[in-house]
Image (cartoon, rainbow, N blue to C red; front, side, top):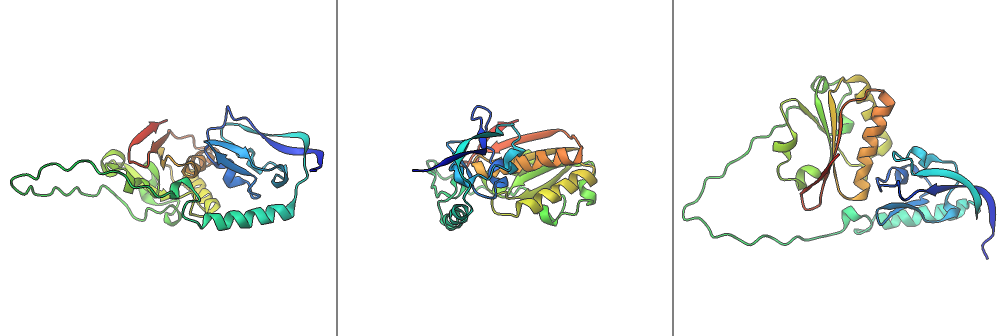
Length: 244
């Protein structure tokens, strides 16, 4: 029988939780997981009660004192090793689940070959990877910055036409595969030093990609540079789902 003692453990208000995944990134013990679009405490023994996950942008996580299983460091270590092994499997994350989409019905070939129209790139600077861009780069000053998840330009067919304007600076990153703390620090510096005019985040609909939104909001808070902010979600079928 599992014994319980009175101690501090996280409490999640699912009505407030939007499944952004910010708490998952912050929890070094792996005690939290996104399940059915909501953050869940998967085991009390994995939670140390220190509250690193309290950075929830929706305020959905609090610390309460209640009867709970004791924190078990050995169990946490075993759990993290198991999770690391699972993450190396191809279906560990919703963004890695293999899908094949049905192609639309073929239309009849035209009588004469139509010349292909090649669109020109609207990219106005290099580099674009967030970690490689200097915070004081001249192309950032007074620019409308688009922070896009790596998959977005490949998924959304009108990426250049819809999101890269005359005054746009593009930054790309992946909150799942890249070094999140390094990216957060770089974006903080950019907000503090570059003098950007606005910030738009383009991310995929999968839960882990929402970490990019959290990164942007944290950078705005850390810099006290309250620029106009937009959050745009792209579906895995390449459709524009929401614009907040």
